[in-house]
Image (cartoon, rainbow, N blue to C red):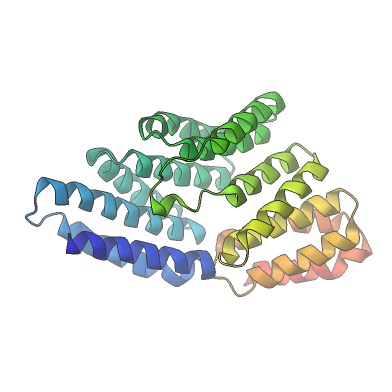
Amino acid sequence: MVDVLQVQRAAEQLGSLEARYGGGVVGAALAGKAKWAEGLLRSQASDEVRVALMGAVAQLHRKAASAALDMGRASAGRHHLSRGMELAKAGKHDELLVCLLYTAGRAERHSGDDRSALHLFQLGHSPATAARSWRLLALMEINSAVAWAKLGMRDLAVQSHARACEHFALAQDASADWLGWIDSGEIRAMEGVMWATLSEEERAISALVTSLRHRGDSAPVYSAFSLAELATAHLRNGDINEGVRVGMNAVDLVEPLRSQRARDRLAPLRVAALSSGRQAGDLVHRITLARRR
């Protein structure tokens, strides 16, 4: 099992660096590790070790996909996702398959294809149920809620949100350690995006503030996403001074990151700032410069 542990450790360590610094810092390393790990699958091993190795390599491909997508490399991201899903299915790693579907859906949502995103999130329900994981069901439901909201289906979005809350309240299951990131901070962040999409800014602000308090500063990439959403909600709500203050904090986080996705997430904030008059002029300027980097 030494090889399995090596692959797991590489995925965990490099994935942590991506969340802190962006996919551009670790993308090449993750792709190289994934190629190296594929070679381990061709070595002699017991059935038990082989199944465990399939899961470890699939997880490494998931991290490599996330890093590639973070830098806007969609083709490379899809390659890693496809191979990861193949290995997760072959090894019957249902939890991992759900996470791969989530990453794929997140990529489609970022590209603007909300129907494809919704389809992928819904596909995750079956393996999440097979894994008996309320936590994963909550993840897929809250992301389905965001997709429904983006498609203009408010009632269906609210229903998915309610189910996500119900599932997460039951998430006392003994989930694997690597699923610890699916916490109240993650659920509340997506809830905030859903309410913001539905133009219910007060609710969005409440959810996003709670999410940021829970997350702390361990994952600047994802904090930058939430800060940008929060600043946008404040500006749309007419809270110009607060929107500018939070928006400046978002740009502060984004500037040193090697994450195209983080820069892309500043685009709606720039639109909201442009509509907010002279008070937001400095914010518009900083966002423009940050997005050129």
